[in-house]
Length: 247
Image: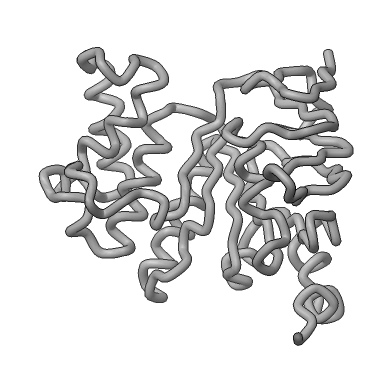
């Protein structure tokens, strides 16, 4: 089953080709008066780490928002393999420091889609939250205010929130931006472990080192696909110099 749309529903499931978690064809998306994605066609492989790479304004975050269901595409075709709705982890800056949330409360928000924001968590929900926090190494930060955490700690809490959604498709927007080298390496290792355990991970990133450690790469330029494949095939000096041309 395929679905064409102008204002699409949040989830569109179908029997995608074997080995593909998401496929999109001729995808257009953007904001009022500002188109961003233009006739974008590609696929996200299952059980792999895919990096979305490109300069500012290339459409990485917009594509991630479309895949997450928080931005509507204006035209095209978008197919998901059957599974749970994707879990979306926004940039750290999208979550305000002023919010009076502890680390645990932040992770518990990952259960809202399942439970609703006003219903008490069940024993199973609490077990899922405990497991996600243990997995990301943030259980000891449970009572700390989110705004008090270091950048790496905060990012791990947000990824734990995504993990608490129990999706097999995890979408992350710039998960290592602004972190020190040790924190970046730790986040990359955690994401690699998630893939090994059966999660499809997609991350938008400016970090070429992180992108080169991915299994697959989509290179974007001005809302169009400039390359798709393994990082060593896509992130070549020629391709990168063409995309990041000096002003």
